[in-house]
Length: 357
Ligand code: IPM
Ligand code: MG
Image (cartoon, rainbow, N blue to C red; front, side, top):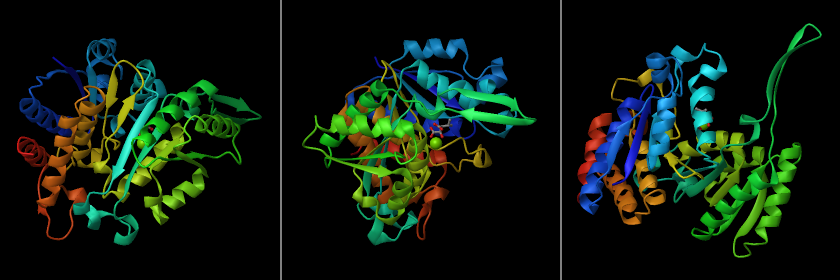
């Protein structure tokens, strides 16, 4: 029996995670998979309950389960805390590191029903289907950080560090993913300025020789940010380091209509973690306005990558398409003529659809 650990977290997290659970239960019924669910504390919710953002108990639950579904973490209530006690640096980043989740997969697809929700013109964005493969446990996020006093001033530093091994393993994954898609990898770096990017480019170029069937191009990150809004359909697989991936995936997400549509899978260790790429959206928390589709689509990735159940994964993805085709919309993807629904109604619609398609 697959055991799924739910970490709803903060803000809209506790509203969107139950919607993905509805869908997993519906798809489980259809394909005879009986999931068991446990729930753990993380982020601000954990700080409030037990004083730390990543309790030992949560780590233990993570080690015992087969896959983790996380909602979102953080919010203004905990922003004043020192970094180690904040939900981001004190919980999510150490959790990714602890579980060895070095690869973050973020597919961005424009569903035809959402074409008017995209900020780009129809002819630029029609058919968009790309995936960002983001390195997740290295780079400037995890390099040495320091504050010091210097000549009466304060000085802060963050260090961008990569080893050949770290670059090679994420590179391999990107090439493997590209092989099953349109066979193109765009490796994004800042090799004209950063030493870590120069090493990145050398290693990926070398690795590319093992994949002669995959086209490899290199692009500077500033250009990639521009190309994403100028002509996004040129991309198939974007391979990049941790911080560039963080930035570019937020940018890419809205091309598909809303960041509320962008799922993610963090892979690399025994247990994988699935989470929507958006944040905790404290401004709309508790109002049933959040879009649960990114979390539901993250659950589809869980079916695919953790449980190897491609059919069930596709059933969830099809159900999402059908519900969108029927015109149902949360506020973030609302366009003229759409039928407004709440977070929970959207989850129920997808769950009902999963049993049919
Ligand atoms: C993401 C988020 C996180 C990140 C934050 C919450 C630490 O923005 O998953 O993209 O920067 O990785
Ligand atoms: Mg981000």
